[in-house]
Length: 581
Image 1: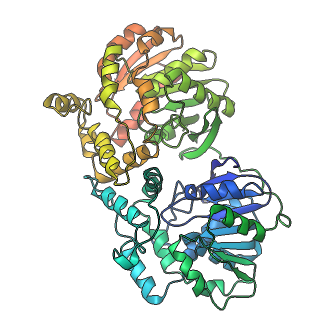
Image 2: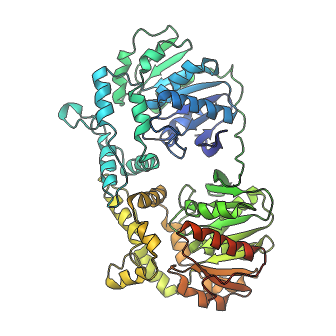
Image 3: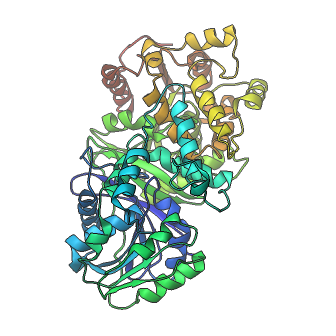
């Protein structure tokens, strides 16, 4: 199968679009079904890309694409957004595929801009009666607004699972049973992660699709159209409702396999007549905003966030485990006001490919080194938080001519014995279960990391150990929405998070810190659980200064902390802040 790459584009209006791309040749643009993303199309993408360039978009508000500005967008709004995206990608003429909601967006786009669509493939076009449309609009998209007790995820998992047991999922009776195998726990987990990306606004595309009369719009088209469906798709029965179609439309029997679907699409889409798709457009940095992109490494693609001006020495930022580079976005933007700034999802976390099992920090640093080389960075400064500081230390040792200055925020100084004790309980194995039981384990693991230290010590000592390092601002952040963001990011890599996390916990910082020759700023915020390690870190580090800065939560504290970092990176005298260590 043809390898699939992930990429980002930015529309002229600044909206972020995520997509998957594979193959070369004439462009076939693919639009996915609701509650999913282009991830769900990967088997079809890889197969069709054997003969053409396939570009599968995450629709606005789905996957990693930003939503539209409208609170209740219509299919026409999604179609207009598709046109903007195609303009951004340099695709004036395409073949177009859409499934379920994607099919309705495809029809509307072909209706509004017929000169841009050569041929149209509609896979699973829903054609509802008026009563069915009203029922779907009323019952299909219940609220999944985040709750602090995780009950919204229980509802979400149950809904997702029922989508493979009943049709429609909310009509739970004998006549509505789907006679098919339930997807594997791993497949359900992947679908759940896709749903997480769209919550809480997952309902918007669904409701737009329910309100759109796809059959009436299809009857107005004057271009070759192929109507098909998969045999196991409940919507396949709607093919019989596709009547009074233009002569340019062809309706096929439901396909029984991926191979038969690919054969039908390949036979319908000629390879000549469309020019080859151009290369993906580059993603440019800008001051005051965060841009996302992917960088190729030895293990696959890793996600990069970037911001900032063109001039000045670049700054690389590395986040702590088990979070993602999203946590560093405020600092990325603030530090990017006078220099280029970059941050990455650590391999094995967020949207980055995982390193091999058993990898150590130096192995992961080598992967990051691939990204640095791909970006063509000659020299740069580094900021690393907690386990991210381990990556910073290792890169400073491995690349002494490139790393000019290093900020170590929360040095990780566990003894080997403590580290081994910690990882025995600190890194629970997340194994998907079709009941969704693993979600409750994951939710409490992530939530308890903010309530106990260590998180698994559910004792008064564990409470006091965490309260000593919990600010009022952080405690106020334990809301449903805040937990949802962290939980969603974590679930993307729940099956691999333990690889980089273990590497950070067991990293021999006591042996490695003395090898750093560059100037180092040792620091923590006033409520960091790693603050007690600063005095020892000072003894281990050659050329350093040390500071404790204010709690980073309040917005006004960010500029204070950024000023500290800027002064250090410019080799200027440092402010006292909350004092030296």
